[in-house]
Image (cartoon, rainbow, N blue to C red; front, side):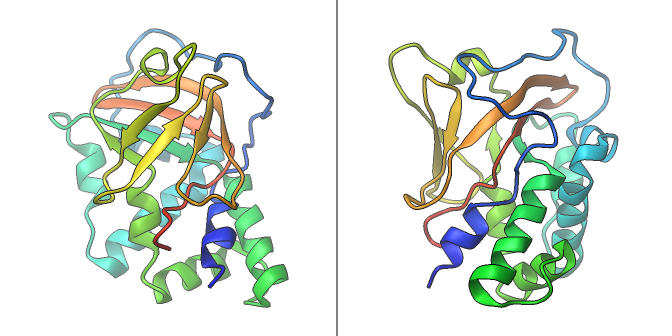
Amino acid sequence: MRRTTTVAAGLAAAALAATALAAPASASNARSSATLWQAVQGTDALSTLEFAITASDATQGTDYIGALSDRSAYFTVFAPTNDAFEKVADELFEEKGLGDGTVGTLATYLVTEGLLDEVLAYHVAAADRPAASLVKRAKNVSIATLLAGASLTVTPQATVRDAAPSTSDAGIAAADIRVANGRVHVITNVLVPLAI
């Protein structure tokens, strides 16, 4: 099954210019009073991620909105942009002939296959992880995600690798967007756990 390639290749092709970064661009050092959920809601380039979180909560019994709104729980979100979701939708259409190549078709596919929760959980890590703790000079850094047993790897070149060897890496387009209960790193590709 090539679901891995299709889903992994997409949920985040940046609306922000994605370049090969020696070090990720950093947001202001100030911490916003907004929660992670409010930050996602308030960012136009993340509106598809907002839709995916809402759809997961409504159809798969998750509570991402509650978790990302909880000021006492700290998370790091690797947030794919709208362009990334569109890229995955196009690939589903082209590679599998599924649907019409729209994000709506992608959402339906992920919900029907029971994959939406797994893909979302794979984009969240427990704790507030600044870019400086992820991008090390001479070594890769492994980060456990909320998807049980799954981790991501961040390279010294500021790319995020998922578990699927056949997919594209994600660049960190905007790092260290600090909010009340964690931080957001905007990434340029969708990350996919190998199990999918």
